[in-house]
Length: 107
Length: 107
Image (cartoon, rainbow over all chains, first blue to last red; front, side):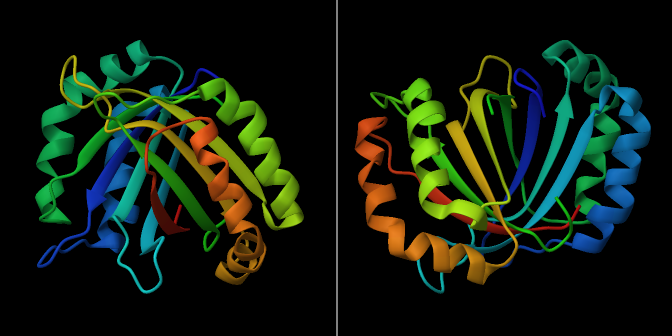
């Protein structure tokens, strides 16, 4: 992604008793978000956490979803009107409360 | 990145009194890491945190660096012998203790 691109990361922290349905997330949830936000999304990635930095440690996040937009306006104008629908789907795949991180691509 | 690629994320948490020299990180640190790890690295990205999910909130991370490898072996075999040099450079650009997250690319 080129410098200045806006990256919106949705980070799902690991925890005891927490569940995350990666199949639903990759196939159903992301398809719904892509359909709702349309061309405002210029890229999307999903990662599954497998470990932390220390040997045999748990990952900080069991899953990370990242959406890329050309600008903050493009993100806010597309996400805002669809926020209720998107956030309402979260209980269908996890009982984790995600952390949102908004970043600017440097490299 | 294709499914199964290993993503090593280095996450620098925001905090009071914490500093981060993005210029040194993007230009000097990453060049050093790329030089040391060589062809084991198949991709690298850097993001600057600009906000959290709530209005006017601080980002969880002021910076995120991501390195991509074909396998865990490729990461461990290239990083291990250079860990001291790479970790020793951290105080040159920040007083933050980073979090390491190892993930597998799903999408």
